[in-house]
Length: 306
Image (tube, rainbow, N blue to C red; front, side, top):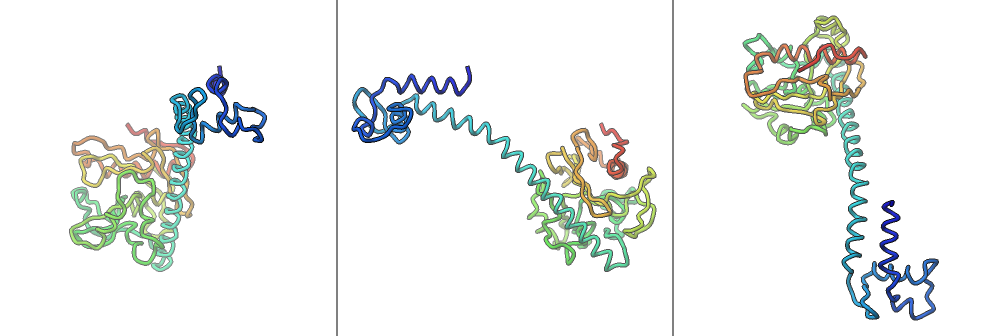
C-alpha cells in the first residue's frame, strides 16, 4: 500500500464517524466536495478535537502523529536538496576566489615586468635543511612572522586583492579565516590561506609568468594554485582540507578555474600520521604539482597516492 493511500485511509477512518464542527452543522456553510469530512479535518487542523458531541480545543494523539509524520517526510525530502545547494554554492564561491587571485597575479605581473608572485628568498622554516626557500616551494603560507614578510599569495594582500578573504576557500574545513588574517602583520605569528600556491616550484623556465616552462615530468607548468588537501598531523597548521577532501579547484596560468574529483586521491598531499612525515614533504610537494599539471592535461593522475 502506498504512503498516500495509507494516510488517506487513516484519515477517513478517523474522521468519518465524528460529528462535524458547529460551522458545518449550522447549515449555510459549504463544506466543498468532501462534505462534512473535510470540515471535520479543517476544524481539527485549527485546534478542535471531537469527543462525542462535545468540541474542545486541542489535537488528538492521532492528529499529532499525522502532522509529525508529514513534517518528518518533508524534512527527509528537503534536507538533501538543501545540502546539495549549499555545496554547489561553496564550489562556485571557491572558484570565484581563485579568479580574483588570478586577477591579482596578472596585475602584479603587469607592475613587475611579468614576474610571478612568489615568496622571499628566505629559508623555509623546518624545510631549511633541504635547501628549500619560500620562493621555490609550493605552500599555503601567506605571512612569515619570523621575518615579518608576506609570502606566496600573501604578496597580493596589499593592493592586488579586492578582498583579502579571497585567500580562503568558503569550503575550508579546518581554517578560521579571521584568526589567520589577524596574524598578518604580527611578529612571530604565521598565517596560512586555503590554497596551495606554486611559487617557483617545479618550473624550469625562469621567473616570468608567461614562460614558466615545464615541471620535472616534462609537462607544461600550468597550475598556479589549487585547493589544499593536506593531512599532516605531525606539523602544526598543516592539517587542512577543503570541500571535505573530495574535490579540488585548480587555477591555471591562463586564468581559468576547473574542478577535479579528489575522492580517489588525485591532487592529495597524502601525508598522514603523527610521525616525522615532513621529511618527505618536499618530494610530495613536487608530486602534487606534477599531478595537478597532469590532471589539467586531461591525461589523469600519474601518481596513485597511497
